[in-house]
Length: 150
Image (cartoon, rainbow, N blue to C red):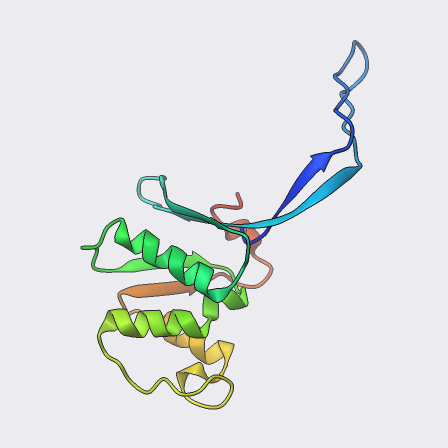
């Protein structure tokens, strides 16, 4: 979940009564948003390295990935299934994967050339199966595939 609103209802809900449904107050006060990143081990169903932050920046997601892989440092390969949010195709994530591969190379320049040229080129690099970290991007309009949102 990339942004959760912290909402507080102005009035409390009214409980149901015989023959009447419960009533929920529709007015609320906003208390800002909070970034929540959850990684789930699909094999065990367990949540690993939950991460919360007040912002939704590329370094927040990259840090959450590092925290997740630190839970099992000897794992040969990690697969991350994500949607198409630009944070999941960031310059910082490309640098992280390249560093973990131990193959520093000219990655290009963001918006100009090379792997960093565009979100499409970065996503292609990040989803390459030969890497230790492999990112799989769900199709657009397929949020129903998102395991955490389910």
